[in-house]
Image 1: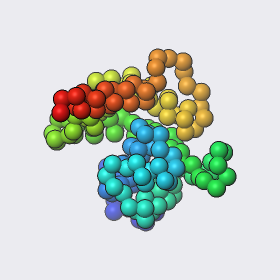
Image 2: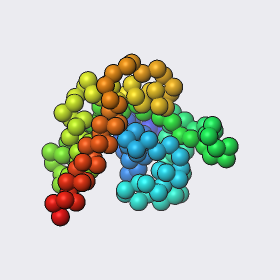
Image 3: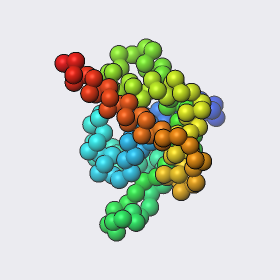
Image 4: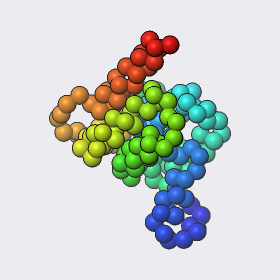
Length: 167
């Protein structure tokens, strides 16, 4: 990592996460469980280029937000995993989504997850972070209700169906 412009914590965070793609890649890993390069490339709604994705994954790995390891299910593939510092971005991503809901013209289907995270607050965020720790770090998750990811996916799919029915 190059020398930061200053030691201000906000500046340091922006230097790590403030580019056009890093938070989007982390979002796709969190909410879409996209852990392979091909999945991140082909299922990205914003249309990231392969060279940009490769560079950002390398940078996120170098910064300790993502790890890269062999895929136990396929000898020639690698799997990317979020690290604890990346998982701790859940509240920030939830707040960014809530801000976007309040101030920008978000699409209804894509806004539903942000709305649920905003309404669920810290309790839901903690539950989601525990799920991510189980998925990406192999930690045991405390027993509980239906997984947050499943609830978010169901709400998104219901919103898509409602949008299709209305048109």
